[in-house]
Amino acid sequence: MFDKVKRSWQLAKASASVLNSDRELLVFPVISAACVLVVLGTFLVPALALGVFEDGYSVGAALYAFAFYFCQYFVIVFCNCALVSAAMIRLEGGDPTPRDGLRAATARIGAIAGYAAIAATVGMLLNALKDRDNNIIVRLIGGALGAAWTMATFLVVPVLVAEDVGPVDAVKRSVAMFKRTWGESAAGMVGIGLACGMAMVALALGGFGLAWLLGQMSSALAVLIGALTVLALLGLAVYQSALGGVYSAALYRYAADGEVPAGFEGLSLESARV
Image 1 (tube, rainbow, N blue to C red):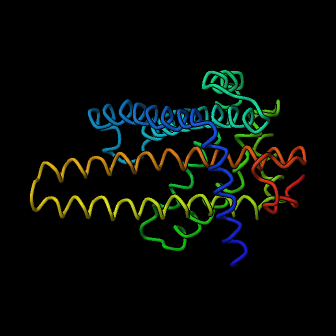
Image 2 (cartoon, rainbow, N blue to C red; image 1 turned 60 degrees about the vertical axis):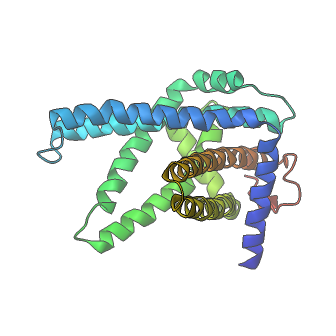
């Protein structure tokens, strides 16, 4: 367990080193977050105004929910594909621009849309299981299946941008890779999540604590510190998303080609090749 935790920190630091060498990669999570908010507003306002879900999940409401899920997944996967495409260029020694990533994602827009439809369907089914308030067992099963789906599809985005395959084959390819890279995939996800999570907790405690103390003297100053803390937390969330994309690109490259990307040497990726 100690070795796994240690490796998780090493993986997170290696991904951060690559990301720090090309801060332009951070633009993709920002675009993704902005698009997600636009999609949310586009669907939420009409749903509230028209009372789409007032009578429960009718056929029309279910189709509306699916359309929302599809659009959300589409913009997220599209931006992730752009991020991973640019990260792969960086890992190969190139100097990518945001346009390079967007161009690569646009070239795979059909496969991205197909995978978004699959992810939306799975997402709706999993949420239906997890929302069963009167059945804790079903909710636990839904949570477990959700975690398994997340890890099994960890390499779908790199597959979509690097291989000329459809969405179904991309999922199959990701699952096949995951069977050999489950340790590395889990270590990377845990390492990045743990590092960024701890930083967020520390920042939130420090920032909001300082805002509370300063609030005893000036409410305006407290609001300012609180707002800056929120912005910093959002920045960390963007950074975490970009870190995940860089690591998935690095792990895919080694799993597919047997080449350890620069910055990841000696980090126990030996068993990853498929």
